[in-house]
Image (cartoon, rainbow, N blue to C red; front, top):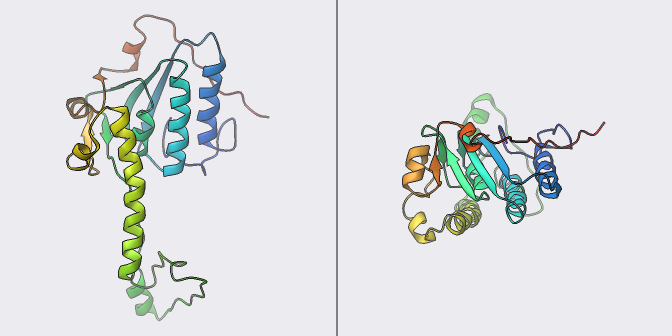
Length: 218
């Protein structure tokens, strides 16, 4: 799993990269020759729903076969979310991981509009329909609504980390689950992963490793 996690990114064998990964994991689950899966992750994260879909596919695979996650240069935010589905999490000492949190951003260009003499005209069916309209300031009620939405999504992420890593949710919330990033070494010290190593080749320990790829659709 490399790059941004998004259902809008075209896949090599299906409509998008999310379905590509789900297909590959299903193929590994159904193939009796596959005794275990090494999932290599190099991703900064991405869409919440896309990350959750891949995480659930990893969980289904883990229920039938061992899944080892190897974190490459980057496995942060949604990348770490997906990683939590593995049975054993491994990283390089210099891997960037963590970033447990959720973010929604927008851009306010009201002053620029005023400077060039433009105005946004909006017709809406409800008060929250243009919630992130950058042509005007957000109201206090809108800020509260968005913040509550973010925190509910964050609670789901936090709950997964707490469950999969056997760590207290309140302890995480009040310490390391504040969006900060960690090196692989620091992640191990904080029990976010299970081990560190030089590279993914050490996972093989001399055994032959088969790579299962989803079949292309022509």
